[in-house]
Length: 242
Ligand code: SAM
Image (tube, rainbow, N blue to C red; front, side):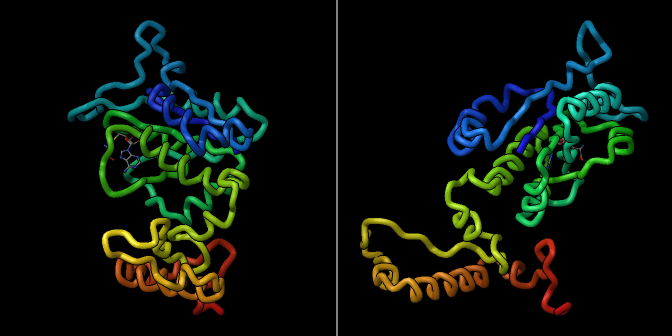
């Protein structure tokens, strides 16, 4: 998978790209990340300005349409295959595991990060991006949101985790989209808390049954809304449709 990030602050990504799962995925050629500075498409050759005051007045600055639109167009042309354009914005559809799975299907993503008061509306009108929010709160910029998208999406790229089963068993994943079950490792007893005996039994069917019950119980206790939601996975029908 190729991911192009369009940002005013590419340096924010440097340490993140060099860490852990993502670092290994890049080294193994499973994921390519390309950083592009929107300022390079500024029409202001002296100060590389990309923002201006809002028409109608008000606080802050707005990202101008020409450098952003032209940056996206130029980056699209950098590879044979056009990418799915994602605009990070608090006004987009709220990211969840179903949307992450949808994004992971694309061989190429472009992640457009905003700053200041956000984007000139013409950017949306011209580029028609897939607008994604990481939650109902406002960040200073889209970079952290882009990292959230990258982090969640690359886990689903085949080969990145090593064990495909591991992402299928995560919270919000699998056909039921339940929370993950409780996990234990050594020691067997810590400060009076014992590991449930079934996990030490070696009986794999009993362990699977216990884990499924634990996932259902935890989801019921912590996130009833997940049990109520009928969001089907792509290509699946809901119970009612069957
Ligand atoms: N004035 C904008 C609004 O209220 O919709 C917020 C602008 S915010 C200060 C600057 C940039 O941060 C946005 O353009 C967007 O790229 C990013 N951003 C802020 N909150 C975000 C969120 N919840 N999800 C994704 N991106 C976000």
